[in-house]
Length: 217
Image 1 (tube, rainbow, N blue to C red):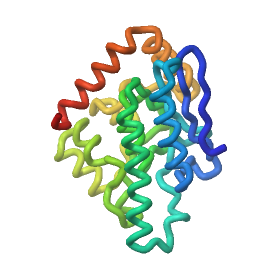
Image 2 (image 1 turned 45 degrees about the vertical axis):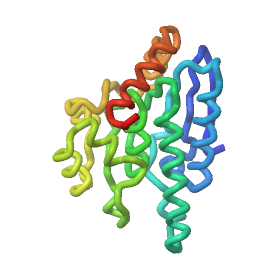
Image 3 (image 1 turned 135 degrees about the vertical axis):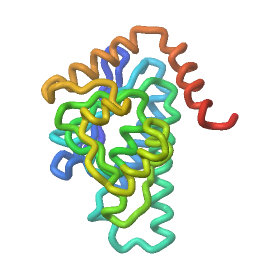
């Protein structure tokens, strides 16, 4: 399965499981992710969520090989699928931790930034790779990135499409913590367990308050 979900101790781990493609998202994976996020939002036993990727990458972006041949109508349908996935993640009323290693590129960066907290391994990097495939940033990338770093730095990262290493992302305030590659899962789980064992309803309300800072109510 390209998306695997496991649950233990109040924590749901959502694994992008396509390591041979660096977890690049196919059209089916977008829909499956959105469905999983919606289901986790309704699951009262889940109190925190970890989103991560199998193998040496978090997510290399969308599956470019499957994008060829789109006309305008198909392209719009694809974009709607992306937006549904990001909105389902963003609106999940539980804290979500991104645990990233290797590339988080294109929509992989969008997924990362849509999470509440980010833990990165030393091999991780963010890459606003959209111009490299001839598309504007999607998946809410501009919205989320600008919240973290401001409009000037966000423009620089989008316009240059340069790699943003984990440590630099930490220095900018995007990444919460940078850890050795082999410790990524343990660090993410420890943080998720701390959250799951705390006043999660209060954190749900806190998440809503953070979101309302940027969204008119």
